[in-house]
Image 1 (cartoon, helix red, strand yellow):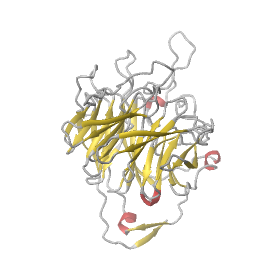
Image 2: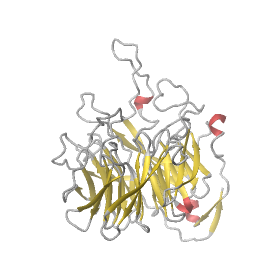
Image 3: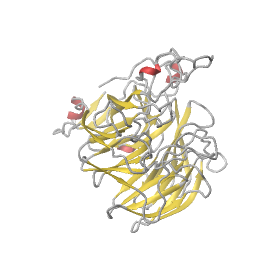
Image 4: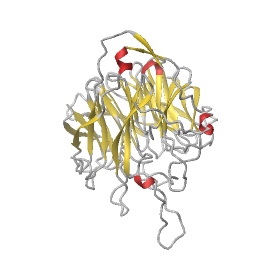
Length: 465
């Protein structure tokens, strides 16, 4: 296994747990005795270009999800105005709103306020629990589909906040109580919405808004809000917050009840939390979407001017108490992250990485100006990081591919920031934007990776240092 590097200075170490491992109890000596087989590329499935796509392929996509009861993979695809569906790991189809419901927003920049390219786009988040698929979109809406119909039938939608032009983004689902927590990350004050699901029909009813500011919830989220997850063990929602109180090095994870009360804030330094995944033993993997350098200075977007060594990390915390359990050094940046119970591994997909070749060369100013050109982080190498959830260490970095935006404006940047896995096969799905570097990917593709850990025959509890 790759080991954490020891170059982090005392400035960062002040906020992270020690890399000297405390004794860790693990069941099954085979898990401790040998590393997992390497993750390898198995297949690449081309994404069809829909009739609604005005370009040549897909570049703007977001969250992906695998329904563990069916093994079906879903991807929010903005360029195709669709949810892409992979069935039997070989058939790619697409779902569109129907039954009188307007289509998805697509890749649509906001017209009413200065905003990021995706702030008014859709679809964005997807969660599938058969027989229903839940999808977020703009402006500020959530839709449900009944998967028992062919094509899947749009049965309901609701608006998270009337008049809010920005997108409903990521979401989590409590299947026992039939409650969705949907996040509007790009609103002036980011907020969440509790949505009641009729578990018989899939009908949605938007309810309480939770504004992530000091006045409403006590959470001063000054950099948006990202991935929520549902934990059936604690019966709570958890949500990653990239920045708290305007402090660039401080983010966190908040715990939210099913009635919308923010019960706790778990602070995390030098991370900018984005992705969030529930792992074993009530652990949460936090995807850090920003890289700092070893001396605590900002490295992301500054690599051409910051000569200090990058110190990427992801963080594992305890969901019950909020304690930081491990700083997974060398992994990241992590946007969407996923836990696969079939092989006891976390997987983290990156929108950028410290391996991108353009990040280490000085940016040249535009001709005839003294301005410094920004580093293009949406180009070249990104990584799919495999993390052993038992030892809580980085095990492998698999290269993926980011596509830069066309300067002429024909398409936006497409980053390999989305990941999901199916525990039935231990296969991992990572979408790629249209490119000619990955096979079967001229119009965009879903790459499939595989690994199978050895099955332990010795159930003796061992102690590993």
